[in-house]
Image (cartoon, rainbow, N blue to C red):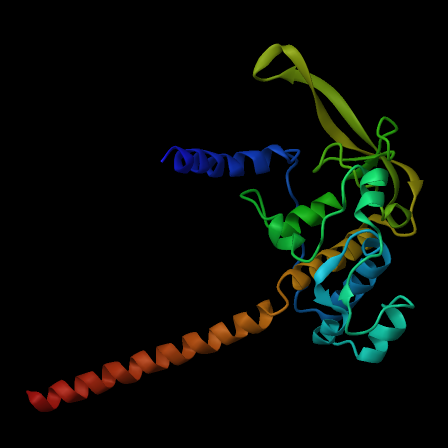
Length: 254
C-alpha cells in the first residue's frame, strides 16, 4: 500500500515536472501541412540534412517515405548516405559515449517527438515550431546558443545558416510576486547576421520540417482519420435503416 501511494504521488507530479522543464514562453501555432506531400517531402529533406546527423528516428524506415510520394530511386538518390539501404532504419552512427562527451547528453530519438512534446499549452508540433524559431546567440553557453522555449538547451542551433544569427533583447521589470526583485522579460530579437532565408521563408521551412516530424510520429494518421469518417457515415446510415425497420415492424404489430 505504501508503495502504491508513493507511485501515485510520483505520477501526480509528472505534469508539474514536465511543465517545469519548459521555459514558459507562449507557443505559436504550427501550420498544418500534414496533407501537403511537397511540404512533407521538403521536411524529409531537411530532417535528413540537419537532424539525422545526431538524432535517430529508429522507428522509421527510409522506404516508408514512399507514403509521402517518394519513389525508392528518389529516396536512394537524395536522402540516403552512401552506406545506407532503402529498407534500413533511420539511425545515426554517433555513439552514445561521444554524444554525451560532446553535448552533455545523448540526443533523443525523434521518431515520436511530435507526440512526446504535446502539453496543456499546445500540441507537439506547436512546441517544435516555436522552439526551432526562438534560438538566439548566447556567448555564456558552451554551444554559443540559447533558446526561449527551452532555456539552457544543450543542442546548438543547427539551422542558423538558414535563419542567420540573432541576439535576444531583455528588459528588467519588477517581479509581480515580489517587488523587491527584478525579472528579465523578453523584448524581441536583434538580427546580427543575415541567413540564407528571410523570416517568412525560414518559418515556412521550419513548418515543413515540423510537418514531417508530425507525420513521422504517426504515419497512418491521415488514413485513420479518413477511415473514421467512412465508419461514422456507415454507422449513421445503419442507424437510419434500423430506425426505419423498427418503425415498419411496430406499424404492422399495431
